[in-house]
Image (cartoon, rainbow, N blue to C red):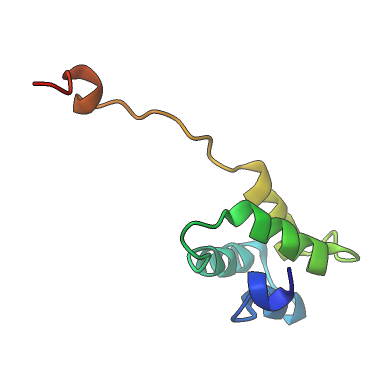
Length: 91
């Protein structure tokens, strides 16, 4: 996967070039980037590619920490319940 594949607008790349960027700013950039992951593709693979491409040598950078948090805090798929869980499908 090339950087164009996982970061077509260069948001992640540019975050590494901003001197003095904060973790809060990186989280905002990350969210802007994450909503652009194409439907049907897992964000996890894009995050892993971004870390492999940009993270090495920048372990203390706020964006590296943000990307790692994106991997660590991936929500688990779970059943939400609700009416559909309580009412039989045939009636």
